[in-house]
Image 1 (spheres, one colour):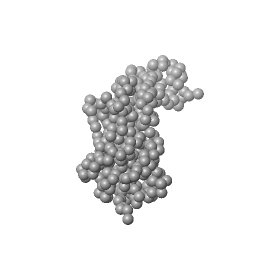
Image 2 (cartoon, rainbow, N blue to C red):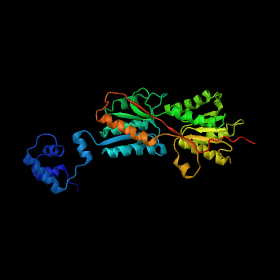
Image 3 (cartoon, one colour):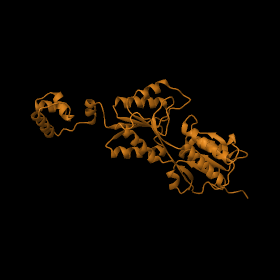
Image 4 (cartoon, helix red, strand yellow):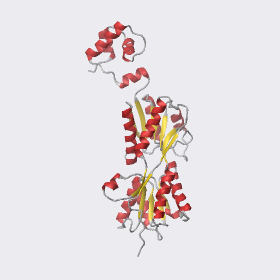
Length: 341
């Protein structure tokens, strides 16, 4: 049986409150009594649990992290950055996967509040076309610091760290244009999310600046999922006047596009060029050399955690802050334009 503070109190002949004051170094305890209690603690080899400490101090050494899709390598790297900084600062993390469900996100927030955590990092699924009063009330009454991780909470303002998605999509699309493409398709993310809207804006901006008409039939709405991108790519392939290149707006959608091209026996870039958004280690390991716009994922996690720690240390406590990180264009040849003979 594990040793409890009740055991310590009985053996030392003192009250539970006195043992609690010694364990938490709070309140006055006579030196003689303190030494006796510490001697009993050593004798019984007692180690106070984090939960027990939190009940007396109303605070744990834990940070809550909520992401929409833990299986996505993008969030895996973000979590690594968060975890690295947490370890450096002696903090623990509790991780929740909302599966892009606002209801699950609300549930996670409520659980974290009950756990008396210090703060929250959240890649929110809150979207601007869906007002949820329960969500807004829940997140605004947490009473602890909250930092957004490349996500947005509609109808509420929080500090956060973001990726410049407009710039990334602009540079990716412009790379295809510079390679010689004029008919460029795009498969977007969920269009009720700000990052997806920004990536589409970047795509359109590149076309407009380079005097290429925007063809609405080349703009297909996806949802960041592999399966959806696979279906959308099939639609592009079967168009009578199909595009010569496609910009896929996420790493998983890039894989879906490639799957569709391979099934149709189409070569990259000979039959269709492709450029994706976000790093794709799986494709790199397979030697596929797919060009992409690489978001600073680990840095995104690190910067978010560092910002939260600053709030926990009462720095910038009343200041709304936004940090924007720049993505990097990495060309590997899949963007090339190869004219038909």
